[in-house]
Image (cartoon, rainbow, N blue to C red; front, side, top):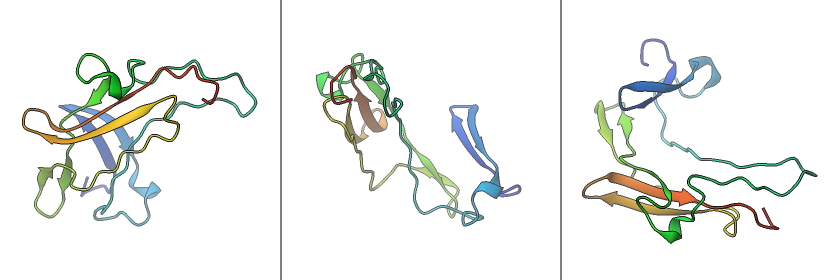
Length: 125
């Protein structure tokens, strides 16, 4: 929000996230990098994770209807005031035996797409 300096996350026509501008001392005008992600965690000495991520299926098991997806990923270019798709996205899954991610990229029908997920429930999770 150029007037208040606050940052908003919007899904379709619904605002789903808000960060006061005061949290970001170097982002008064714009950002040159965006990051997002998900996390499944447990206490350091707690039981192994039994938590699924997404649908509980690895992205390698299939796309639509099987693993979880995020589609039509865009960000607002403050200079042109136009929405643009990512150009250099990097997808990382830190514990591949538990969860994975497939950085599909730009598609003709769904814009920029990623698939992700996994069952957890592994001795290394």
